[in-house]
Length: 262
Image (cartoon, rainbow, N blue to C red; front, side, top):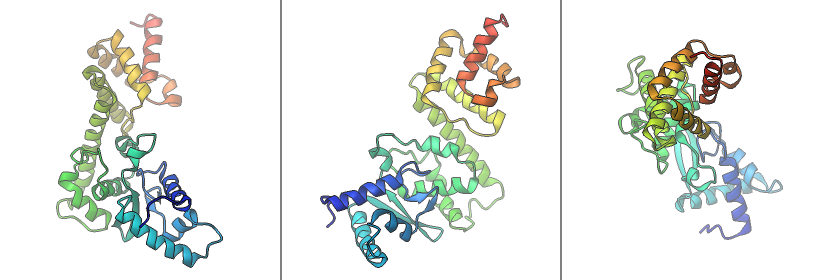
């Protein structure tokens, strides 16, 4: 039984962890959302002087043992084998945020594949209701595999569902950013305004929360909503460089009131 107690085995496990870092789906042995082939995996984790047939044989045995130890999970999607390091996002120093990753995906097909992988692997700490997997998980899987699901066959329905999931994720992200209701309300308001302006959801960062707290010390929520209306109607030049960030909005307010614009 593989016990991760030899230097050789530990090295290979570390290599798998290295491959899984910074992936579009945290912990996936992939390039983007495309799984690495068996040949690509063995070339990365075994010594280069080892014959390919021996690499493949060793990987077949060790993969089965890793699966038995529940260190990896395997799912087949679109006829391809996806290998996932179980709950990788909980083990690495940087906590991976599935909300942020989902909001960054622009292609609908990739979103469906991402949701299918969530449905298959069920990472700990992920509320499937936010991603509507409790309702449409099986249908997403059918779509990812090229089958037309009965419930999602109507043209345009999948886009409507993906929009609803995006709205749910934006709300969950805002709630995760801060325990304070006012800050959460502002972050959700800001995300919606950016989405309304650009067509893309805004991915919140820690600095955004700090800026929101500072804004709410100086203005009421109602005042910020009114001022944001002016900001989005006639965005300052800094938006082209820095984007629609709360920090740019704060700079706009400082300039506006500093110049006696109120």
